[in-house]
Length: 88
Image (tube, rainbow, N blue to C red; front, side, top):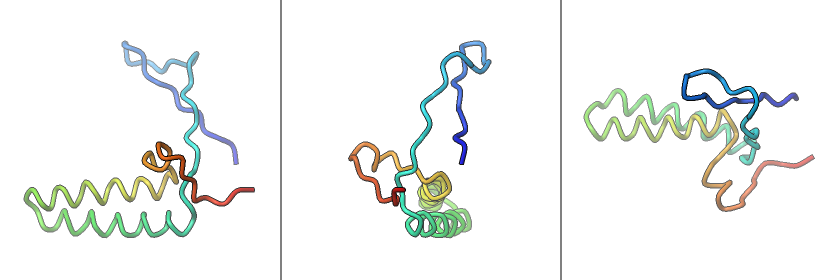
């Protein structure tokens, strides 16, 4: 699978093609990604249906979990040096 390069924006709002960002490594296992995606989507939906501040917080937490599941990258895991994804 080819890695997709991501480029930061300059002050003018143009992609800086001379300085690509390093690719995010997948550090979350397959089953954990599935659970995060499904659980995050459900939590976000319940939070949006609930409304209010509590609902907004639930929707934000659900969105973060869904993002973690879809991308396969967890910043907390990266900071702690944890990798639950299978290698090779």
